[in-house]
Image 1 (tube, rainbow, N blue to C red):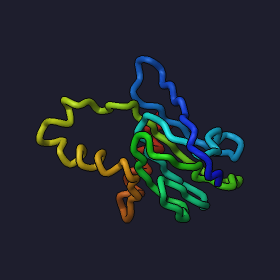
Image 2: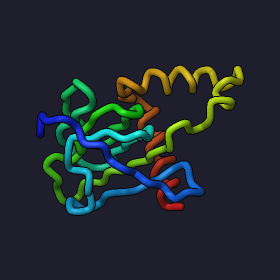
Image 3: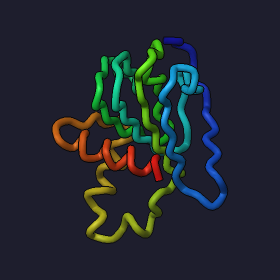
Image 4: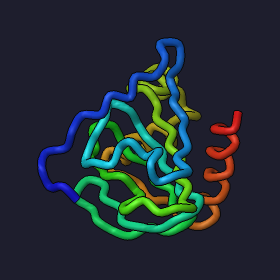
Length: 143
């Protein structure tokens, strides 16, 4: 991993969209192979594969089924390092301010608000949550 300062990644979703969803199924598709950060909140799901995971000051290893929520401005490195054939990475990036300040103020959204606040440090999910959310991410990208 490059230990220099992280680079700002410009996600640039279409002007009428607040979410960018992508899948990276081949090693050469992952264009973010460097230490970077962005304004967007990001959910990364690794359906197949394993490797090193760098999020903020945390270094660990991941394997198939990895699900991570990365807050805005949190530096991170590609989750497929080095990229290998057969690995599948899904990325969902949500525009800064998603889902909106007023929406997060309603009582029913308080658990989501707390989750997003904790995401500034990065969150790894465990158990059945990974599989449930992972399937929804795969479906989102297919649609």
